[in-house]
Length: 240
Ligand code: PEP
Image (cartoon, rainbow, N blue to C red; front, side):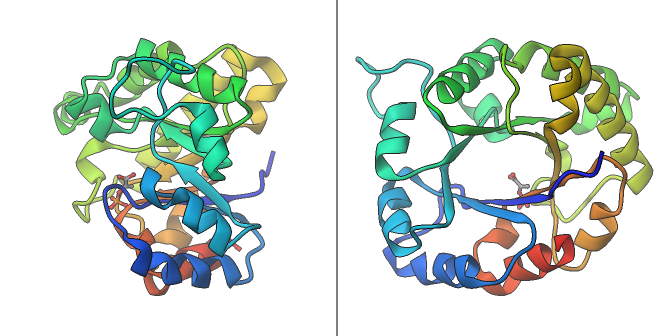
């Protein structure tokens, strides 16, 4: 099934109010695919006001609705600020914040319960890829991270491809996405066929068209190249 592509940016810990002009330029550009930007929590409300019809998201969410969780943000808070979606399970959080598959599953459930769309990230390390265990490892990671209800998108992001300029071969992306599609259908039945499978890791204007032509690639999660309209819009154009 051909799904409408989703090109989502992840600004990570980048962006001040002065950078919202980039978001406004991205929001105004014509697009036939869905486009979203996941921002630092500090910018979500101002971004929603600056581009009211544009999909603004968070980069993480706490699994609890409220309480003694210093520094954390709940799904209701993201929504209150104007977010429509959130990323969960990014490898930088799985590594640096020691988030487990169970944590990611709980976060995804909390976000879905609150009415947010969810992009759930999975991906293997270079050691796992070189050991020939990438598909088995990422499939198991996905199985253990998926909530009971379908997420909006799953982003396959090889950790070794993030911010490095290296990407897997198109055959490797195809093999991984086919395996993840199987897991999604096993988990959700027919609805698993409608979950968009994004590729993430060093996507740029120069490689996006080739990546988007791979079967079962329904869009991209983009880090560095989402920070400016000049870098991001060619990726959106490739998906159109
Ligand atoms: C990411 O961290 O989600 C990502 C894909 O980063 P980059 O595009 O910079 O590799």
